[in-house]
Length: 322
Image (cartoon, rainbow, N blue to C red):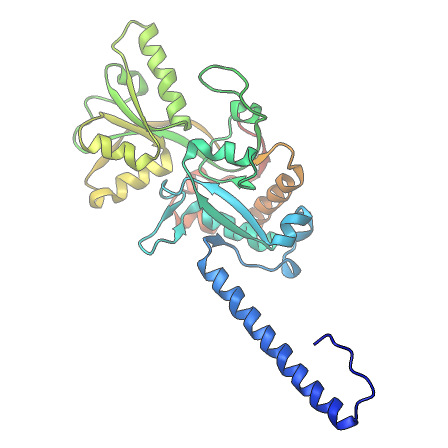
């Protein structure tokens, strides 16, 4: 209550104080209920408050005030990020983000998008970061189009948090003699658009052509599951994806009967959390958070939980890709 009430009898003041206390209590109860509803409906990771988070002061003040870091992600790349049977976003990245959120005192809210739109989403400030099994490359750091070599944007900074190579996999029992990338000439590859695997496929296609060998045909798709569906229908001979993704698909698809990995993984490189170049305070806060969860053992637990210990790092870096 805000009205000024003066020169009342003692009894009247007592009654008014009691009514005011009830009103405030009711308002607080309603506010708490509203907050719980909002939390339950959001796709988020992490729930620590800034008052108990050791690294909260490192964040930009606007993010501390909101208590949220918006994450652009292609949530169809198991086991890195995907929807479980209940529709919840799960995977390596959401778990790492949740652990980082406890250090920073914020929630990481994942928003689904196609992979090829994520860096543009950072530029337009739709997201604060992109966290989506994105390989840290010099071209992405510098805003260079990998096909044309021309500058197309301001580029991004990366906070590196994992290492993964690239694998080839085929329909089970139908490897067609593919053991290395040089065996791909004359084949058809299905791949997710604008990924590191896509870049490697285009490089290999050029090698086939330059060597006078049969053409490597590339079919690109918005998501990796679409590429796998194309191969399952015999429209493609092989799929390329990051090793954790390929291994997970081979293990789980069709109860482990649909696919098999061929050859060894190649071109191991770091996954990075992408941040706009002008957002250095957020970048440095994320770096500190990754290093903190490595130091306290949470990172190791997450990596081992998802069976990808071979990709673990011991030190977080900025722009470690080449």
